[in-house]
Amino acid sequence: MQKQTKAIRIQAERSHNREHSVPLYLTSSFTFDDAEEGRAIFAEEKSGNIYSRYMNPNVDEFVEKMVMLENAEDGLAFSTGMAAIFASMAGLLKAGDHIVASNALFGSCIQILTKITAKWGIECTFVPGADLKAWEAAIQPNTKFLFCESPSNPGLELIDLKALADLKKGRDIVLAVDNCFATPILQTPLDLGADLVIHSATKYIDGQGRVLGGVICGKKVYMDEIRFFARHTGPSLSPFNAWILSKSLELLDLRMQKHSENAQALAEALDGHASLVRVKYPFLKSHPQYDLAKRQMKYGGGILTLDIKGGFEKVVAFSKALKIASISPNLGDSRTIITHPASTTHAKIAAEEKVALGITDGLVRVAVGLESIDDLKADFIQALNAIQ
Image 1 (cartoon, rainbow, N blue to C red):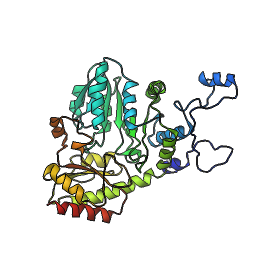
Image 2 (tube, helix red, strand yellow):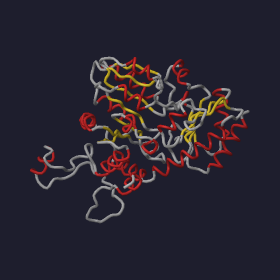
Image 3 (spheres, rainbow, N blue to C red):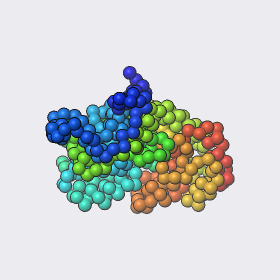
Image 4 (cartoon, rainbow, N blue to C red):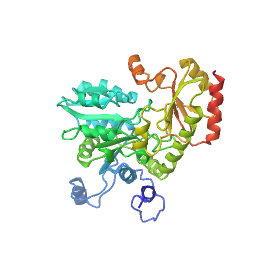
């Protein structure tokens, strides 16, 4: 059975009401037939629901679908993507451990690695993501965790995930990959040697900007430790959000095809425009890692970046001239969204780091939606023409 079919047909067990669509299990706890059953379930001698902080039929259904899509052994859902990222580290690491991470990360990830885990005696070395020699040189005897995004936010830098996984062979190191931009439709990092794959389900997994959520999928030996941490600290996903996200997965394959098709067409239409320094998109031949993108990803994804001549002043004028696109820090929506990373999502990053990552004052991240591509091209071209 193909994954698209499984994403639609996997459902929580049908109740005595014979519902076709899975109901919402909006309950904080579950009941036992008697005290002995409660004892047996708590002792894990018998399976069963206990408390929605631990498990819930809606959450379990969502996780089962994500585990299937990522070709994983196990998975766990969280209230947000950042909760998932934090739990992957807090659940597996201890004082004295060392992390090697790509320097091209979402702003909040950098804050965790420089301001939070550092307080607990966990050091982090940042390296250029595409430089495998830098990764290898940064690995120390106490290195326990490698972390990266591919493609990265917002610079669309790719990492050769198979080559990175090869660096940890024979070592007690976990490789965790943020797969938010690609989704399991475009790439499955676990198949390339990663141990954990993490998503902000708020983005493409939802697809309509409605709910928050996060998920980790990966090897059971690591998920068991993360589950212990999460069970006792409580970053759990709500049943309602899980219900929304599970429904959204039924159309993820179709949506990612269309997002990618629209993004490719828009990138090609805007490439070379006089108002732009450059257009960056993984499946444009001008992308510095075009060959890797074609080898590692099924499609180019729904994100492209525009580097607008004239910096922030021109970005403001461009944003005012657009008629269709929304201005928001989110992405992965059915509606096209533009973001100015330097002043929003990556505002806390030091100026010199922004330069190194290519986050210029003119950089605009475009999360291309599902609108008519003819309408999108016309809107972006007229807005760019207006600021010349």
